[in-house]
Length: 613
Image 1: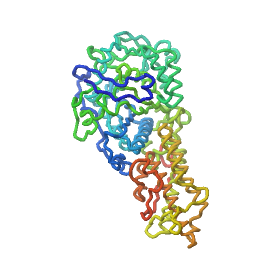
Image 2: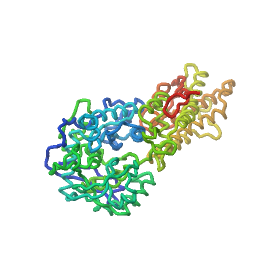
Image 3: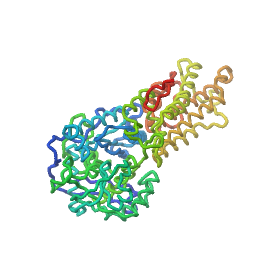
Image 4: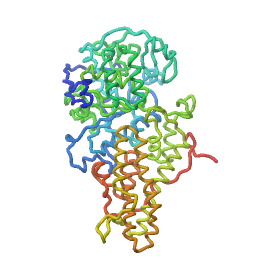
C-alpha cells in the first residue's frame, strides 16, 4: 500500500489542479536494475546531524513537538555523477541551504534533500572508458559530491542515490502504477536526441534548434528506438492552467513566461524507457527496457520520503543513516508535497511540466514551487573546459581558503543568477563584495562598536538604553531603531520567501550602514568625554549593538559560520527568527568582547591565485 498523502496546498487545490490525497495499492515486487553490481543500501544521510548551535532548529528552544510544527521540504536536483562537482552544483545547493536554514529559523520542521543521479547511458559509457563497472564510478563520484556538500557546509538532512535499493524498488512500483492507470504505452520514437541533456526532440523542434543542443551546442543524434511512452499530452490543459493561474509555481517570472509559450506549441507524449543501454532501473514487465533516466531521477523526490513503501518496508541502512531509518519508519512521508525544488534553468522543463504531469497521473499533490535560477558565466561567455574559464573545485577551494567559506558563499548568494539573468563570475567582483559588505561594513561596525563598549565599560559590560532618572528609553532624533529593525526583518523574510536572496542580504547590510551613520552623527566618543552625557552614551552604544545583533540574526542563513563566531562574542539570542529579531534581545549587564570577524585580504586572479604585481 502506498502512503496516504497529505493535502496539497490550498492555493493549488482551490483551482482543482491537484488531488487532495493520493492513495494507491500495488503488490510487492522485486526491485531490479540491469546490472551485476551489488546495490548500496537506501537513502544515505549526513555523517553528522550537527547544526550550527546558534541556528539550531528552533524547536529546541520552543519545546514544540516536531509533529505539531509546519512542514517544509526543500530539494536540490540530484546531481549527475558523470562529471565532477563545479560552481553550478555549489551555487544551487547554497541557495537551497539558505532557504532551508531560514525556514528552520522560523521554527518549521524542515527536511532538506540532495543526492546523486547515477543511472544512464553517459555513466555507462564513462565507466567503460575507464575500465570500471558503472557502480564503481557511481560510488566514487557520489562520494565526491557528498564531500563537497559537507565541505561547503550545506545543511542537508538526506542524501539519496538512484542506485539505492529503496529508490529502485519504488521507481518500479510507480512505473507499474502508471501502466495500470493506462498512462504508459509501447511505441516507437523517430526523431532527435540530445545526448548531453538526455532529452528527446521531434523533427520539428530539432529543426527549430538547428539540430543542436540548446544547452551545450553539440549536434543532436538521429534516433529511432522502441520506447514506452508517457501520455504527457493528456495533461495539456491542466498544465496550462497550472502555470497561467499560479504565477508562483515556477519562478522567476522569465522561466514561467518561457514555459507558458512552450506549452502553447502543444505537448507530445514522451519516451520513458530506453533500450540502447543497460545501466538503469529495468522496466516492470519488460526487462529489455530501462526506465528513462529523467523519470528515474524525478521520482527521487518522493522515493526519498518512502511514498512508494509501506511503513517498515525496505532496508534501513546503517545506524548513522538517520534519513533512511526515518524513511523506513514512515516518518518522512509527512513532508510531501515539496515546498520548493531549487535547480538551474536548463532542467526547468522536466520539473515544471513532466514532473507535475507524472504526479497528476499518480494522483499525488504537486510541489508548491519550482525555482529555476540562471547560469554562471565568465566574460559574457558560457563556462566550459575547452575555453579554460570553468570554475571547478580547485578554483572554488582557493577562493574559500582565501576569503573564508562564508566570504565566498556570501558572494555567490548576492551576485549569483538567482533571478532571470545569468551572472558573471569575476575575481575582482569577489574581492569587491567581500571588502565592501563584509570587511568595511559589517566587520567594521561590529569591531568599532564592541571596541567602544570595552573601552568605556569595564569588562565589556553592555550598557542600557533606559534613563535611570526618568525611567524612559533615551531616544535620538530621526532614529526609531525598534521600528527600523522590524521593517528590515519583514523585508528579509519577504525576500527570502520570494527567493530574492540579494535583496534580503542588501536589507540586512543597509541596517548596518544606518548604524555607521548613527555613530558618525552622534559621536559617542565625544559623549564619553562629557559626564553629563553618560546616559546618552549608554543608550547610543546599546542601540548600536542591539541593531547589529538583529542584523547578524538576519544574516545567519548567508553567513552561518561567521555568525557563530559573532555569537561567541555576544549572544545573538534563542528561539525562532521572530523571537530573536525582536528589539531588546540584548540584555544590559551582559558582556561583549572585541571582535574582528572579517580580516582584510589581498586580491586573487581568475584562477584563485595570488595577484603578482
